Image (cartoon, rainbow, N blue to C red; front, side):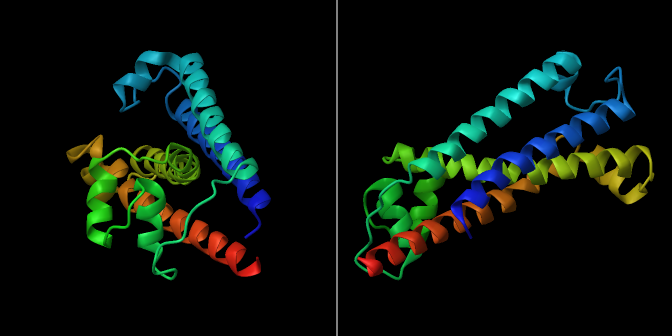
Length: 191
């Protein structure tokens, strides 16, 4: 896909999704009495809006950095191995997939520009999916009265919908590394 389209989508989609979440929250609880997140409830709507503007702006700057200044990455010894590519460029050494996954979760990267660009694109996806889940939760619990969802939501309250973002994080990270690997592979083949 065209980098410019990805860049535009990574700014527009989270902006619209966050606005939908804030608007839905306001529609269901203008006084924030039903807001389940105590940190958000303490901010009130001007604070919630300001915080969301700051978050979307930060994500937008990271994706702009990816769009305008893509990181030059190195190819691993096995040029077809995406995970060797990811570990080489994220940590500076080639690791097997499991070792890379463990280090990815437990260690800081050595290539901060790559990490910042990846974070911007991954957070963009998470903001969209998380916002859609939040909007769905408002309707499912307070309008549609879905008993099964209500039980799951209140029994595991803050963790339930947000733990579902972990697979989104992992998928978006994998997609990022595959796309960058393909970009570098194509660039080297064209030279």
